Amino acid sequence: MFSKLFSSKSVSKEQQVLIESFYQDYKSETFPNGISTVCKLIQLVLVDGHITLTLSVPFACDDELQLFAEKLLDKHQISIIVDGQLDVIKIKKHQIAGIKNIIAISSGKGGVGKSTTTVNLAYALQAQGARVGILDADIYGPSIPKMLGIEDSKISSNDGKLMTPIEVNDLSAMSIGFLVDKSDATIWRGPMASRAFGQLLNECAWQEIDYLLIDMPPGTGDIQLTLAQQVPVSAAVIITTPQDIALDDAAKGIAMFKKVDIPVLGVIENMSYHLCNHCGEKSHLFGSGGGERLSEEFNTQLLGQLPLDISICQHADKGKSMLLENSAGDIAIQYRRIAAKIAADLFYQFDARSPQTSEILFTQID
Image (cartoon, rainbow, N blue to C red; front, side, top):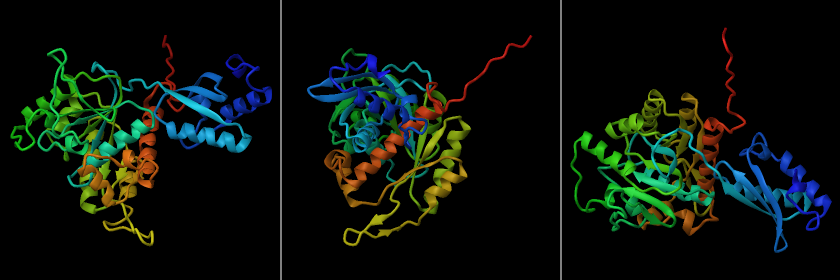
């Protein structure tokens, strides 16, 4: 396979064989069926003395591609650069221009850190190689503009028809907060809020968004039902804390999504523990094991457990993110790991190209 893509004049035959064998055999949590069953080889070339392996990748997973290169180096002492060319397709067919997949980030109640988690997941997906957008669906209390550090931005239009999303750190964002003064209260009845949400989504000039994260308002009210009935959501992610009251409300959110046939990819347990700065001991201030119990009850997965850390809140209040300020830190790594799980599971469960997708056989009945 590789011989057609790699000139023997630039690399030894032994290296070609070792790289190809490693590529064919490599498996991991992200690639349980093997990387070669998921990622298509585009080319293998020598550029400026560096071997570069270019792969077509169906979901955002740059960290895993880097790990692949590191393990090849450890096993065969061959150093390569893996260039992942992201090729995300629509899981659910829709007519919203510029967007491939929509993921709802939801919670049953307020105060669990849903908006903060949404912003950090967006940056984490971006760090994994994706083009990402955020739609702030909280019409009554939009917080995304402040958390992105763009609360004074106002919407414009290039053609007089579609609103242009605000760009910040290569993220695309849309919120009612860009349309009204931040000191004004938004006093709308449910149908008005639902229509406003629909306009923010459909009358926006989105550009090449692989994953649009919708920061949902808490609860199971009009906005959630409008989204479930009118928006082609690919899947949902539930944010909760370990507290029983938060878990009860999160369970209602999962049940709602299941009733309207929106798959739930999993649960993120936020504020799961506090890590002592001095001794490193974990303290479960709000209880423990709640996210696992919730996941088991609804036959979904626990995507991750994020710590209660003052720096996360401080960065959000300043319109910054741990993913940008300390990309090598433990918290940033956890967010990236969760983001990669979300992207991978969306592919494995629902993409027709997935090796785990069941084949449907059609039999003609005479």
